[in-house]
Image (cartoon, rainbow, N blue to C red; front, top):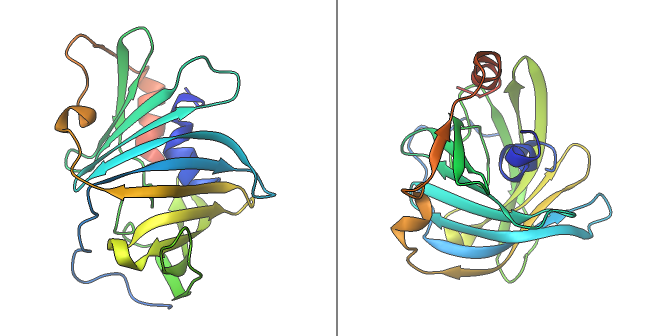
Length: 204
């Protein structure tokens, strides 16, 4: 389970201007696709995949070392749900964890401190330190927002120094089917204890 959910939730938090929280909703993220590079502390790529995004959903396909096929997670921001697709045509559903790469607002009670950042893969950025509480544990991560892409997080480096980066971003409409569970997949029910733990560890 932990390995399956790595591509969104763990990547966002591990990897992973003092301004008030936004009073107005952030600008919608563009429809786009990109390469995802998971980075070690030394900045070297150890896993690679693809991300597809629309205004209210995101899909990540990540091939982890030693795995024969990519793991697939679908974040549905409009439903506040994350679906994890399994190779045996099954899927699990959980409350949507906070992921700064796919959410353009930060959770209530979190803070962010932004300053001009460097250009990454041709995109000018703002560099922001965001801090908050998840499941009673204080966490922080540093994100670089592409200013020419309505604030898409193009790099995310967690407290450990590891993180992720988007490369070769292509802005274009994405097929709606990418963000739906295939019709022939069956839902797996999570154990009650695991379900409650996930709810507890999801920022409100």
